[in-house]
Image 1 (tube, helix red, strand yellow):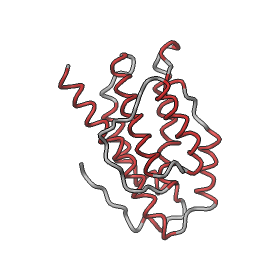
Image 2: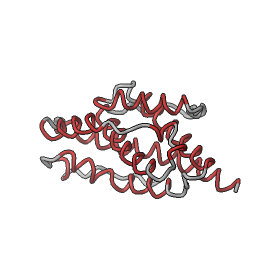
Image 3: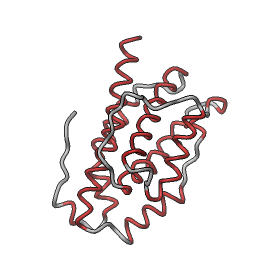
Length: 186
């Protein structure tokens, strides 16, 4: 997997939210492209999608000590919804390095809107598990507001960006592994 580096000239920007978005965009797009291989209207593909998300969210939770700033309750709710739908994180996953709460918050809160889009593609009876969760728009607005009004100190920005990139890499590695296995079995 290609490692992307944090651009030092970007770190001086006044709008840290946009810096975070721009810095993580290539990995976000790679993840979206990989996940697009799953047609979630198909029950088996939806199950694989949920397995990827369950392991990814669980890894993020462990890596931030279940403290994901404004996203803490959202992260717990997503993992709970997946667990109640019968999903369990992959037991063979090694522990990840510690991730900054703001990095995890950015990825978790942003992912809710992708899930909302995907939910719209499903008939009502298939909107279960993670697809039954509504986005916490208040938590997203609070996070955005804080990143704008009280951006992290310059000394923390590079870590948050790097950790957010790693958070996307966690999901991408899960997607690459699980979707490859599905393709080989098909």
